[in-house]
Length: 203
Image (cartoon, rainbow, N blue to C red; front, side):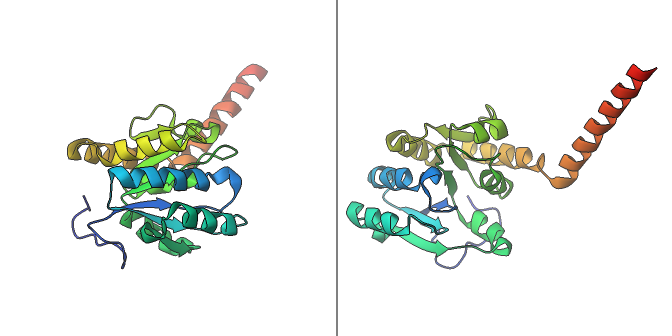
């Protein structure tokens, strides 16, 4: 459900399940896996739409795959989204999928989505594991496995309403621990404890 008084971006229909992908279109980001998954997902969730953000070196390959799988009727190209427009894009989505196959940092995009109360499906890779650990409000799929990814998206979308709402609340609370003021405070506390430990050894 949308938070009260919150409207979606123009062209993001309330009757659709709007699935968001944001990222550079390159091999490690897993977009081909997501498109293969989308062909399966639409069989279970006919009102699914993929809102596809970003661009990159795989553009020709990605467009050919969308052609081959016959997905143009459910794919909307968003292009590269400006930072100031991101919060509204996240809030308009019903879920964000981050299907990377590896070489990711701690997962800025999934954390930003959680902060915007948007459910997240990620892959089980090092960077995301470090960010989310075993948090149950994030659904984790096997990397490079479009069948598992499809199942995890269907699972997330079809969870009972009250569980979805609880996961959104937990996700938002978790994302707030990455708020810069809190992170900076943690760094200062850690630095102070190192400093104290060092001087304790000098006594």
